[in-house]
Length: 470
Image (cartoon, rainbow, N blue to C red):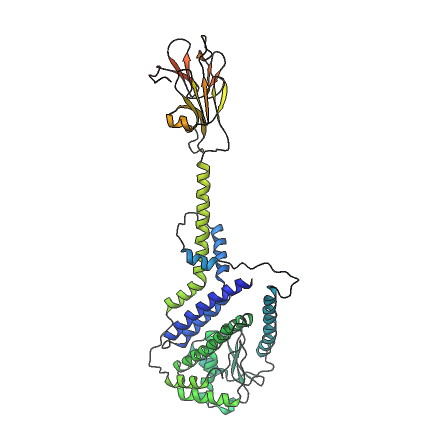
């Protein structure tokens, strides 16, 4: 498990580095674009490629994918679907491979125990009176927020925050409204409404939960700080874009931070956060006349596909190709002769195994062979069947045969001078003395110098062949 976790962190780190380079190239884009990109990078840490690949393999079992023939590059398939195999550890050995996993889980528990009570306390203000609802509704309409959000003035908060998930509320410290002008207070409230419109409480809580899981990895803490910075910048851009004066907004931020400067709680969108100097410069340089560059959908879609769809598709195609190859091999095995069932050919009621070569007096040599039987016209889709048959041999076949039988001619009446008789078994020819012969067997006719050949249970007269006698 330790090696599997290391492989997952390596894949997630490489993806985060790619996102970082793209975010660096998109500095002129809006902060909302970069925030979304970093959020996708966080999601990659909770979506292992191996797990998604296994999910795709499970889908391949459920869906009719036998006809899919797309090939997956070997390197990509191994990188995504490979699972680290750890050596079995001894549970009684405290210094074994399970110790790092135990420390990791204990650290996760401590992180959640510290964070969740703070989040709960921040979401449950007591005796918070409502106020200024008319102007608050006007600000909601200006920013285009349709969700139900309340405005509360409370003594339990020390800075403006947006608290709550299902029923969020903008909470303003009771003594702060007297320190701000009406324009400054509106810009502060617009900032929190921007958080509500972007659902930043949800994304912030998600990012911090992932950080609690990977508490030992410094890169996760750094990514969470980048998310916080881009989140605040994105809200600042929305405040100025929806009509707030940059000067009033900057003045409001400075007065709020002077009123009280405290740490933020993940999942609660505060006001005084990130680097204030950089925020002031970004707000003053933001122009409402400059066109707002939205997130490039193709880029964000490619990142989402790299995180979720590509591993899922690779697992699906790899499993489909495996099932298809197995089915193909199964069909090939079905079409092959069933060599596990030996066959024998009859000559004068004597059974000879497959591969036996016999020569009776001066007659041509014959070999017992397995041949494909004619298809059944009543059941054309039935699998092919094979039967025994005597066939003429060549010198090469004669030399490769393991069993060679020489039969000498007996004085008349020869036991092999055949008087045809109705067959006693299917596909066997019978002589008057009760001897049975397989298809293709050659015998002398008791009525003349002709030969008889067994043809699927019927004797057929043939002229004596002109062959070189041995």
